[in-house]
Length: 297
Image 1 (cartoon, rainbow, N blue to C red):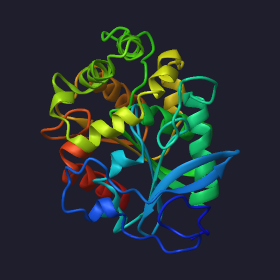
Image 2 (spheres, one colour):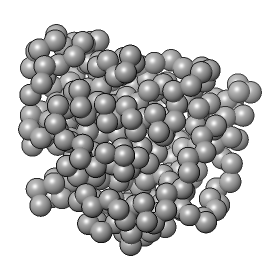
Image 3 (tube, one colour):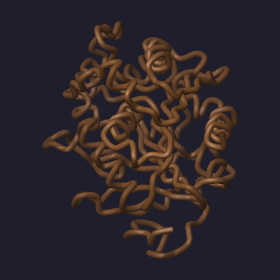
């Protein structure tokens, strides 16, 4: 295992990874999870991440309005078999970003994930991406398939060739609400659109806190226009790939998974029962089990 980079909270350089406090916290509804963050210098950017376990590296890439805390239900279970590394993408928490400047794009985040694999994982890694993080993970895999052992895409957020997102400009509408001071309404619009009606209202306090901490990233995301990937580009990816969907996930996620399943030459697909877009939190036992089963072959 390569030496750890500089740390931010709770771990000395070179110190064995410890069980993060929020993994053993008896109160899962706690609003301020304690995260012992480490940092790595990725092209001059201090990229935060948390780590648990030993074995082949498994890199977790969060989606919109999230960060490494999103994977709290995966760290300890998957850490029994793998060295789990949950990243905080550039401009996301713990950075506070007002939307000014560059550095927020699928391409930049994909490059950061690859640099993170090189510098922190120290060897090819299994990569799991959720929602927008799935698009980032796919970007990394297409750029350098040699850096990945496998790819898992959970309800990946990517435009389909010739497709039209029936949700319209919900990101822009959510951002306008936030700019007008209606932060809760804007965040609720975003979360409910991607996950289902009334999701925001039902969310536990720690999740809402995480989303609020990342509200500024919507400034960057509203400006994004990632190009759709062609079936030929995606079909060129011969990595073992697991496609995970929430059985209750709204459109367009099922259609995206249908397309990827038909294009990827080495793909498997599972649906997580009783869960929508946030299936890793809604049914973590099934989600973690699907990943473990896939990676163990």
